[in-house]
Amino acid sequence: GKTKKKKPLPEITEDEKPFDIPDTWEWVRFYNVVDIASNLVNTSDYQGYLHVAPDNIEKNTGVLLPCRTVKEDSVISPNHLFFNEQIIYSKIRPLLRKAVIAPFDGLCSADMYPLNTHIISEYLLLILLSDFFNNQVSSIISNRVKMPKINKTELGKTILPIPPLAEQKRIVKRVDELLALCDDLK
Image 1 (cartoon, rainbow, N blue to C red):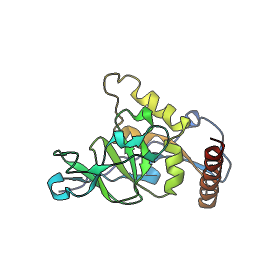
Image 2: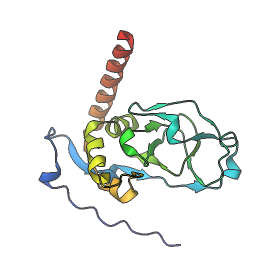
Image 3: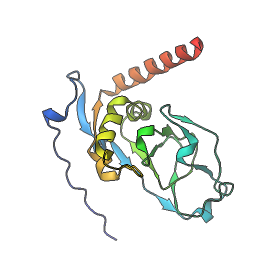
């Protein structure tokens, strides 16, 4: 096989930009900074790997819950092979904001996308969990009531506010500090 060329994504119009960002930031389409790493494999070759399904990710938080092996979950259908530090994003019922940075290599449900990013993973995770991103997804899947899903093309067209690398690091650090403070207050 030949690989399909991606169609060029449309320019981001002023009407699409929901708010102003600093001059050093830029609006980009999802596909400009993220690659969906589809890598479906036969699960029989990965029985000892940990398995991540949407139910293994706490909604809205980016927290991975306990996982079992592919064998323990009796997985038989093809799953995506993912790697440590990739983001795993649930494409099924995406409004639940089930996304996490993988802490190990494993397999995830075909209802999830392993993501490689060209920006700081922790910053992308913050965006994926944000109201801003969720509102975009909500408008895309608004007519899908029975089993809402977002496909690769739709996801690729969403827009993201991207600051310079140093600012991404600063934002992630500050959010981590604030979350730690919230935990202390509990």
